[in-house]
Image 1 (tube, rainbow, N blue to C red):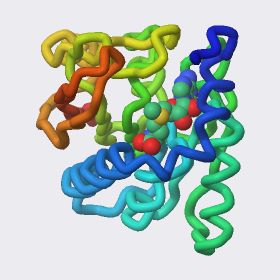
Image 2: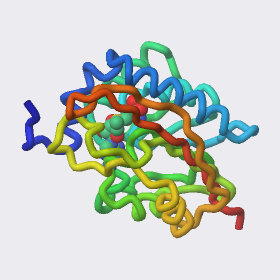
Image 3: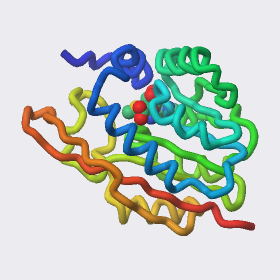
Length: 219
Ligand SMILES: C[S@@+](CC[C@H](N)C(=O)[O-])C[C@H]1O[C@@H](n2cnc3c(N)ncnc32)[C@H](O)[C@@H]1O
């Protein structure tokens, strides 16, 4: 039974210990990691940022291709599990940060500018998409690359918990316009995965996942 009193971060805290055991999520993270790596700049990013890293299913793989990576999330438990993996694997180039970039004043504690920013399945959890895209743009260096994976527009039944306030995926044309308005160019979408699952109505359904890449123009 869904607990309507949970905040977003408490909900993810409560799911963290089971996160990696879900085969549907693991397969999705695998496809997204491969697609992000395939679209990374030829030159290794110096200073990358991941928004909504969770337990690091995508993080740890993309980090192998970055010099430094800052991984942020609003769930303490998700970050605790990622920190355990970082310690166990002796991964020196990932720094984790408990941070709500989309929250009021949340981004003011994030220092530096990033030449590569990526995210997987987090955008639909952020109420104000346009504002977040603009915040991300503000944290990027000119010429930097943004790569976001998320659900295409869906029937609203993807999430098991009906009380979760999320976007029902994204219409690609509308998201493209938001990216342009936030200052990005060279925007390109591909389909990287299709989640096959029983949805909240108990019906088998297919949910395509896109990867959108976009550039912050050079000055
Ligand atoms: C669906 S999970 C995806 C986790 C991970 N990227 C993966 O693919 O396994 C969404 C993640 O975004 C985080 N999140 C939600 N809202 C956030 C926010 N405003 N700022 C940062 N992280 C957020 C959640 O705590 C959660 O870990």
